[in-house]
Image (tube, rainbow, N blue to C red):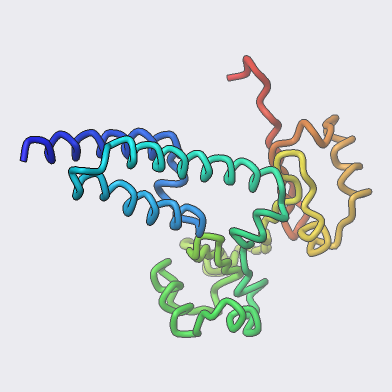
Length: 227
């Protein structure tokens, strides 16, 4: 009994350490690769606990290997957009500018009832008040309300309202998202002009978004020594 107790404690501490090394994002949001990693870890870690004749190293070493593979895969998926789309996918716009995309709903296998349930969980009673609804890579749905349907309704106060639009990621860690540029009706020449006006180079940009109303938000890469 004492042996089982100490083996369980050791495996628990090892798992706690490797999950900490995986980072907060992996713990909070499970992507397909992370779900596979979690299932593997549970199976591998249980063997040394249940079978006393199995050395602890037979569980600890595979756990470390699996976690290293997950960290390496995550690193390459953040650097190579093709791998990210292949293994994780990309966001699906279910409602765009107030119009529901039924084909996209069918493609991602989301029923109208499920969509309505998600909207209600965001405090939305009328889907007509939704400007944009996006299914993220991890399966959650993000909702952006129309300007006139804000908590404080502009039309009730007699104020004019203008849709700010959805912000699309056009640069991610120095890599141009050509698909989002196309959806915005922009091209790389326009993007280079914006970078030049901001006195920036592509490699210096960590994130840049552009809304449907051409509002740009930019985050520069942090250099060593920056706080």
